Image 1: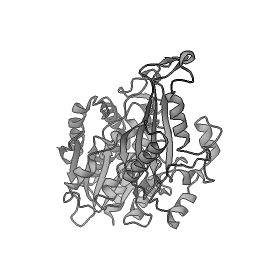
Image 2 (image 1 turned 45 degrees about the vertical axis):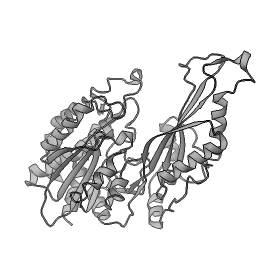
Image 3 (image 1 turned 90 degrees about the vertical axis):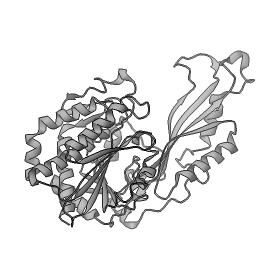
Image 4 (image 1 turned 135 degrees about the vertical axis):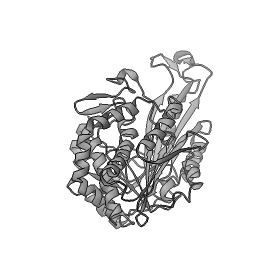
Length: 446
C-alpha cells in the first residue's frame, strides 16, 4: 500500500486531469446527449488501463468490456461501473458548467464526478498502479462499463447472460454511491431495487375557469391527491396491497451489522437542513435505509409555474418505490396496477427505470478479503453495510451470474449525485485508487 500511495501522490495532477477530461464528455443515456462520443471514449480508457477491450451491442446504449489476465491460480474479479450520467438538471442552479470540470475547495464539480465516472476511473487507475508497480495484476480482472444504469439498465441482464462463459468469475466488486453517513470507509453487501412510475390524471381538454366550472368539472389535482393518500398512511406504512410480497427478513448477522454502524441522526438531518425525520415504524436510520420505501418525486399540473384560478386539465405524480431483498419488480408492478384500478381506474400508469434488489450475505465468499483490503488501504476498520440505500443493477451479477458482489463506495456523503453541483472530494478520489488497489491485492493474496 505504501508503494501505491506514493504512485498516486506522484501522478496526482495527471489523474485529476484525466477525470476532468472524462467529465467533459457528456453521456446522458436518458436523452442520448454525448453518448456516441462517450462509448468509444470509455473503450479508450479501458485500453489505456492495459485491458483488452471491446464494445458490446446490447440493443440499447452499448456495454464496454475489458479483460486482463492475472496469475492462473488466482481469483477472477468482475468490476462493474457505468459511464452514463444523469441529465444536468436546472442549469441556473449550477455554480459552474455541468460538463466542464471545475475545482473549488478541494472538490471537483461536474456531472458524473461521483456518479460514476470518478469512481470507476479510480478502479481503472488502480489497475494501472498495480501493473506499473508490480509488472502485472494480482488477479484476473474483467471490467464492465454500463451505458444504461441511469435509465435502469434494461438490457444488462440479457447481455450478461450471453457472456456467461466469459464472466465465469469468482466475485464482483463495484464502486458507486457515497460512503456511510459517518464518512467511514464502507463496503456495501447489497442494494435496494427500484420501480419508478408516473401517474397521470386527466380532466377537461383544457384548463377551466374555477368559478364557472367549480363543483361541476372534476379536478384532476384533487383526484390524484386522493389516490396518493390511499397509497401511504400518515405513519409511513405503504398501503398498496401485495407490494411487499416476498420481502426477506434481515438475518441476525445483517441486523448486527446495521446496529454496529455509527450514526448521529440529529447531525445527519441538520446537514440536510431538516428538523424532523420521516414518519416510520420506530426503526433507526440504518434499518430504514434497508427497508422498502415509497417516494413522491414530483407533483405538477403542468401550469408553467403560474398561479391561475383554474381547474387544471391534467395532474401528474412522478414516484418511485425502493425494493428490499425478496421483493420482485413484477409483483410490485402488478400490485400498483391493481390498486389504481380499484381506487381511480381512469388514472394512467406508466413505468420508468426498474431494478431488482440484490443481496450478498456477510459470510459470503471473499467478504472478509474485501473488508480486509478496504481496512488496510485506510488504516482503520471498514464498515460492512448490508444494503446501500440507492439502487444499482447488481442483481444482474448476483442473481444472473451467481456472483457474490461487494460495493466499495468511494464518494463523499454530500456528492450531490443526480442534483446540480455534483462533486467528488479529490482526496477521496485519490484515496479511492489506493482502496481499489488494496481490495484487488487482498483478493490476490487469497
